[in-house]
Length: 468
Image (cartoon, rainbow, N blue to C red; front, side):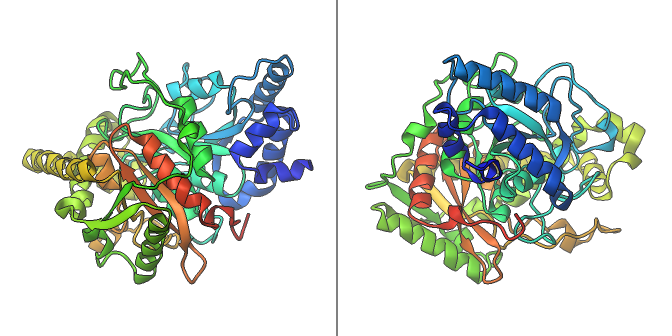
């Protein structure tokens, strides 16, 4: 096939062609690297491109496959990873000027696992500063492939831009409050936040230790499944990973949701934070699941609308503790938005943090109780499409501090549960809308199964962005 067409293949399709030796890993890596050279000036997706290392890895993958040593579905597939993860011998900035020259001596476990699976690392993607702010980018702001004046979403926006603009086959993000699913919904992609403890966080710059989760941002559910399969599993370097078998996530994608029970969270669907156009599109998406044989009905989770406020407290206090030393020594090196957030977090009363933890337990209990009845829960990922890019405000106001209030991702972070955003339509202005599907802890395979059934019954994953 023409090399220029390779980047438009899904990771799953590319994997099958590589295994059959109809496309070589070298051809694939060259195709993506050429596309990055040609287009990334528009998208600001990458902070570091590893051309020489990528080509070395691609040649090694090709030699192994020709010799009959095919390692699995990620072998030879070009990937991008968020610059929040350590990468041995490659600078790892965390999106911060404080670490702009930091080169780790070790790989994050997720990167080591990708290499073990034979994936080809193209480079490190753009990230909001230390991944603890939704909007502040210290080097450049990633641009949305559907509209260059729109956000890609934080904090894994570079991975969203790179994947959405066909500058990698699949990518990794990290999700503390929605930082995988937010870029996914705004860029028309699939983003899966795994169950907490399913994927190692060793070598991942910390946000909130009890909510951080590494997972895929991909173009299809199958791509997300094979990416997750490559990075999941217990890790002795991360004591919070669980010693449970990693299923074959791709094998769960059988398209059969007959008899499954889907609960649509009523408080969020009817919230004033959901624009009517988004509500209609997500309602229609739920109706598709009903048409596929699932039982779909509304379910009440009274504290679901409190999730943003609860996690907001945790996202303020815990990063402030992590960054205490740099805040004392290099406060002015932080972006304005992040600086204000960290300072507020550093003076948050202990009573507020304690109350947030108690409320978190209540939210978690309500989500788990609903999942005792329903196989998955459904809701909009975001109540509105991607907003326009803005500069950090000079003075933080109530309006600017609530720029992420219309994201409904945090409920599953608080519940330590898996959740996925899948494209489900567009606004009248041509911007993507995502449906969020959440499931029981370690029920990632069920979430992927439902998302894949929906995806295959609709055309949204076949749409190409305007500017890609």
